[in-house]
Length: 501
Image (cartoon, rainbow, N blue to C red; front, side):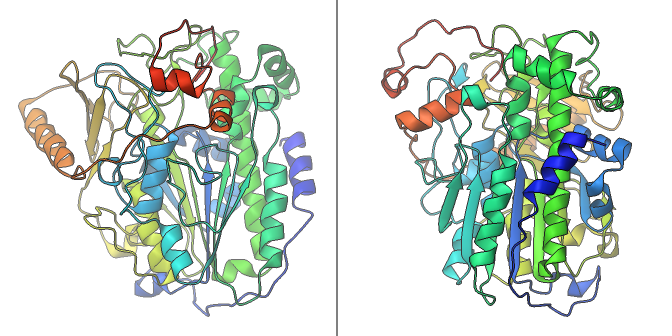
């Protein structure tokens, strides 16, 4: 077990919030009574966590969260609708595909890059689960270490929160611990609420996004702190190409990444322990999810266009492909009226907000939403009809769109009009494209259907303040961009050598 993780977690959770809870009186059930209204919702985003690493750590370590997973709905086959934060979080909050909510679209076709074009904002008429809750008397709070979600900004994906607490990483503090202070603040907010106040909280952790992009000296120091047992576990979870050479920086950075994911697993278990100890879990629904995954050379040298690529490690990071390592994410949900179950049905981040709204007794009906209720994926509801899952809105490279139906998946590289097809059951790593007439016809239809969902009007591009620009640079975005004037002008300058984006 992780000595550092355990010690830090114990200290951070020493401050427990008080307040009376309102038991709903629901017995554990997986049938029609499973969505009886709860009083509170806690949304937890663990940024940049790929599903294979997340679940493998639980299986190999049997850590505190493993026990909690037995009590939750564990979705092993969940997908993000985009490979980076803005469009994916917007989908989780709105129940809509990126084509529908509009957030996170970057200008370009052949050479899209966030380093030169700010993303579009959430469409004005699109509502979030936080807005719906606030308008119905809930107290809403966001606690975040991500510059995209910790305060109101032009991207506007976090509209509806009454309060924001931000924790801002910088390049010198990229490897620092932020979750400790964030948990203390979460406890303080809950302690200050009146007993009869209903609440919706969003807590957004970013350690798994940052720690593996720390400077080489600090990275090596962190690696030296791991026990041989920890290193052995982390290597077992590594993607095939990440640690072919265990001395490579791909491998070293992955080992630090796996450690960060493990730390966050312990943090989430501690939050659930705190809720239960204070009686709040009786009337609180909790949804844990990641916004996207992370690549560690999984598809290195595949010929894709990468406009803004870190020179040393171009196939590490996220935002530039629609392969599973960037789209396959964990979702785990706890509802006091729903028994734990492991669920393999394909689900999406778009399912989170409509499901949570139903648990809260809110009428939240996003127009033309294709979301399905997470609680209806349990076995007692019967076999689910296959549904298409889409992804789009990359942050770097050639414009792409992907569709998945069951285990069949296709990625369309739109600028070059190149389409690849994968059988995820027999080829989960998407290493061998297969093509048949039936696949071509199926995915041509699905891509057309997704394109037809596009909102009739598009929102404008957001603008960056100098403070936001610095925050984005500190977590690996916009390397080589020195000012907002440069973004606005689009002037080309040489990009300094960097190790990740």
